[in-house]
Length: 291
DNA sequence: GGTAGACCTGGACGC
DNA sequence: GCGTCCAGGTCTACC
Image 1 (cartoon, rainbow, N blue to C red):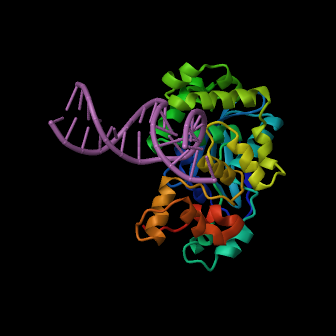
Image 2: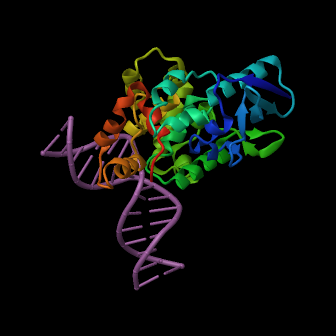
Image 3: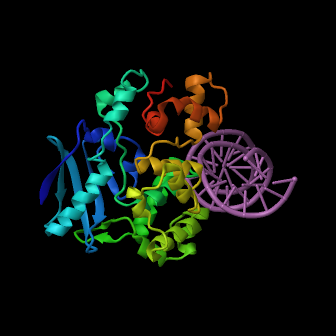
């Protein structure tokens, strides 16, 4: 079955899909040009479903294999709206950057939305798996996590959904460390899954949290394995753009952009984007780097 | 508050 | 093929 979902304009599906590397992490699958992507998800009943998203006039077309009841269709629609930020209003950001040569392209290309997973649990796990490793390591760890512990798609069992916190919580550190290859991150992921599964940590509530960003950041930092960079990255995914996710790549880019290749620290990166105020994270994310 | 060292893996490199 | 070095954030212990 298929249906369409409207997006607040301007909207570009390729701009969201290509906003960062998430599309390369299981259980996403996607075209290089960003014109379509697939994702293996689960609906509230526990059923595993493959969805396929393509561009449609004014929004996106959602296709799933087989039929869903009304509740299942609503659930998928809700997930897709969050994943693509279909309801996000970035007009204030566009007005702020229109005159900046390093950012004006954002408006022309309808950039600004960032691809997300359906749950903040999945995005938190993936963010922890980006830390202290090469991107190829993140891809590999995520693939193994889904392959070993995700529930299979009934029509194609080799395709699996991202593991639920409940399922992850029942595994053990040694399996995650050696079989999945998470290394020292294994206890972090296990503790996170158990906290979410037990209800001690309600990550989904952070999507609509009334907390001020500094307080939300402190809450994220209390998760083992989430440090300054990871917290800033998660805030970006939550639509809070007042922190810049400073990693080694950011240091390198800012060094080359404004400091003639001389070594810089976190302070220089933050100072470079300070003028963009509550939009500084987005300004950094979509900056048109010269190098 | 700041800093050093450990954590773990894969890739690059030299032999 | 093997050994060594390095990159990549976060945590913990220590000052």
